[in-house]
Length: 121
Length: 401
Image (cartoon, rainbow over all chains, first blue to last red; front, top):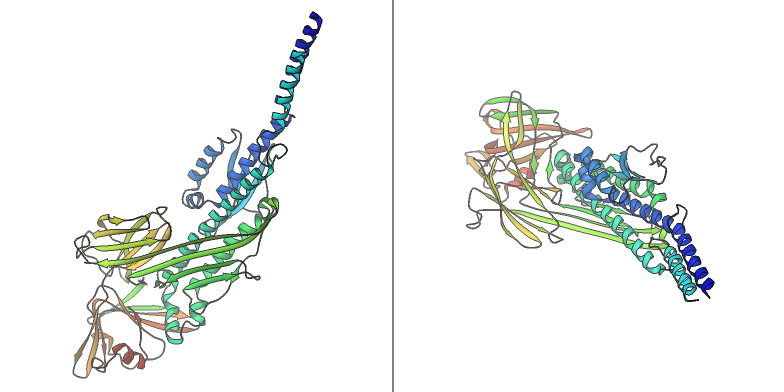
């Protein structure tokens, strides 16, 4: 009977290792779900920036300070993410290329200047 | 056998847990409804906060443009009711174009990333141009901004010609700034937008935001507001979430040719006398004496103008002549667009600025009687039951107060 116990324990360890590997591999469901969650939070952060009166008034009065503050805050969602404010091109906000994630939202400053809020990671 | 069962159970738990990882929109095992409703509330939150922003920005534009450009056109409003000229003057056009930019750019350029499609409201002129109204073609989206009363002014409008008359002296005026508010003011926005959010399969989502502020100035009402200081009572639609900032504009005359402009008055104290969740009373004590003061309030970023002095005038007669005398502490403004024969020779005026503005292809002339000033007439109007009506019958319109 001893070989049965040996087999059971070794297969348990094998399954455990496989499961743990599966859980942490870059292509795994869990890691992808985590990425999706971060991207959802980043896009929500971008939408909030583009529609927040406080941010837009500050961006109008003190552009550098507002962008710096937004960058500090976006780092708490994803340490590799960054926020930029750009000029629209041809009446639209093109999404700049980024290795993982990029969103560009159109918004208007209190003086009527159109800008794009870009969040990328 | 037990070990095998444990192994199977553990790996099952691990696999299920990874599939049910908490990611928005990652439905599978979690209840899709929870994720969905959370996304809807986030979308509504973002859109409502943008509508609040547009409301505040539009009220800023509307108030400042009216104080900057509206006065030259307002005499046409007086003469012909709120006619075409006033309602299509620069203060209205600037504000309407700001609205169009802020709505079009946000809702059209963001259509793809936000999955929004809205019925964009267009300007829908009203008879009284202190209300700006926008409605969409389907009538679902409605937006309105109210300034009551509009603070007519000339802060950025430059006169064609301007002269100051002071007891026989005639001085050219390079710059004349006027803001003519009332003792009370009310501003309001209400934005109601109907939209479809395709990413969330939402149809006909109606997002409405409304905010109003009313303010009035009080002079010498009780011990908290003694003579010599100005009290301002502010009431808003929403509790607590607003801040107020107070400035006082003071009349200054400097340079040659004269600059008849405003400067920020030095204030000895701005203190909160009383407050509730929805209202506050501020006491403003100036440092020194103010001339034709105008209170500029910022409540929740929205500027409002209030008259900071008492408006009082008297009719002074001597024989067949008469004069309007400014005995208060706000300017008195009269205007004409056609020749007026009742005015006495300018050498008799005291502390009067005459400014002519171009309105379209017409000219409008304003007589601004400053504090302690007087404007003389060749007829005696003082016994008329209504002095203002008597002047109007002779082509001179009483604009302010």
